[in-house]
Length: 94
Image 1 (spheres, rainbow, N blue to C red):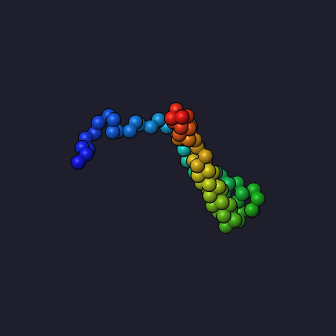
Image 2 (image 1 turned 90 degrees about the vertical axis):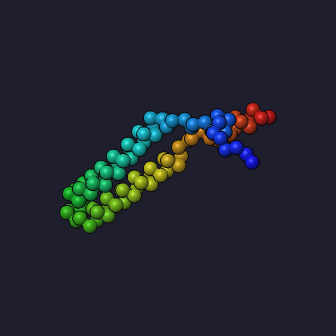
Image 3 (image 1 turned 135 degrees about the vertical axis):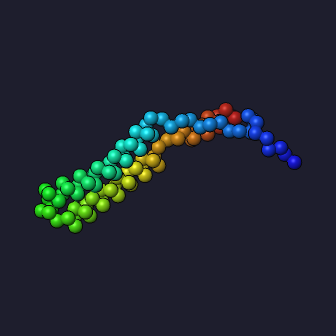
């Protein structure tokens, strides 16, 4: 039966720490998710919709969903470097 001792040869390396860019993106989208819907609500209500709160609220909901969709898209497009490491390991093995 194999031993389950934790040795350096059996423990994988820690991945790279997230860069400042990751934290910046998170902070940006957090602030945007708070500020943009509220700002669009009051701006549209006072300037374009003549005090109609229903349509202004709908616009605020759309803006919040757009910010959330933008965050998801940016998160999916973020490069984690795993493809590059896989290509390098393939070249080394050849």
